[in-house]
Image: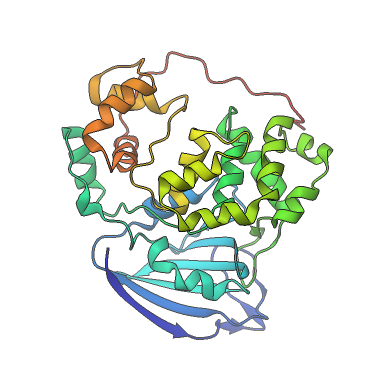
Length: 333
């Protein structure tokens, strides 16, 4: 997806020594913000593109504000950074703060789907075609960051979404650092690898994280540099590298490269709900497993993740007849 990319260095707008923050509490504006504008060559829906990066409604690293802006607090190779993006007149206007500001702005087009090619997708089912027509602004984001997707994905292994989101929220707020610049209140950058490795066992327990998931995260952060280098590999090889870490399997690695690489074909297997949703949407099968799901998605080879996203966006899900996964009681307060 091509587009026009115009850098425009500037400073934050400061009133009374503070920067105005939509949807948050003002913070001292001690750091100049840098701005860039990028114009996509087609429809762009910020919510659809960046939504997969949000880990629950209280995610400290992600915020959507009433003025239509999306804020991200990231740990980049250049250091922590805060990015604000908003669509104005068909153009994406971005502003960033912190040591990672330039890194984030340089990769703004990829973040918003510039390296994605929606035209390569050919719908094979009426439901998929209709959803694509209704959601023309869907693009697959490419963050270029591995750990920021890997750690929350590990936290989501074999537990409810609410439990995983709670753990991520508590750990990032306690051990991360405040987002640079005039970010909305309580936004934080996730901890660096060394800090993750130093979290005491009882703090994992308090956050509701069992020893298996905590140990997997600890193994991952010990080889963080090698895992971040996976962004230079194609998605299958990147997944293979991630899966060298004990405790990281196909489900987790697919969830990561979908975000870090914008991997259009990396469909998630081993999921509790996705096979049933795909099976029901495409074949009326409420009991589909991974094998059935992969068979149904075969016509979309090369674009299976995009097909699954469109199916999820269609809202066509099987009637619930199984109880929700029970909550665990590990460390709940």
